[in-house]
Image 1 (tube, helix red, strand yellow):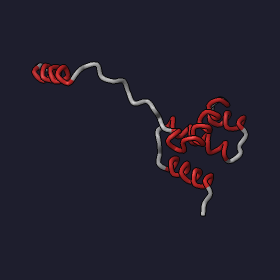
Image 2 (cartoon, rainbow, N blue to C red; image 1 turned 90 degrees about the horizontal axis):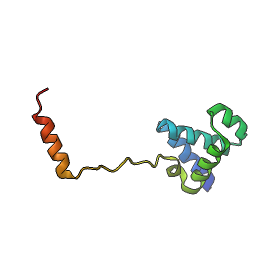
Image 3 (cartoon, rainbow, N blue to C red; image 1 turned 180 degrees about the vertical axis):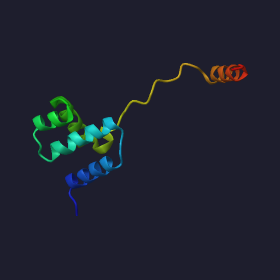
Length: 97
């Protein structure tokens, strides 16, 4: 039976193999290298990141697993209500290009 750290490392490897967003990939790779015992100086040089970057994402991973490495930005909420959107779409469709 796998212990918790092995399971987390397996999840991290699966995440890396899943071809995530490049920003998420860099986070996961930094965490993986740190967990494997690479010195921060070496990780910083290879990935062009700072020590705070490594510490932050390692901590996020240890707390929340792979979900802690994913992008959290979900976009800006729209400023138009549904009626306004429909009105604009109708207006655009009536234009002769």
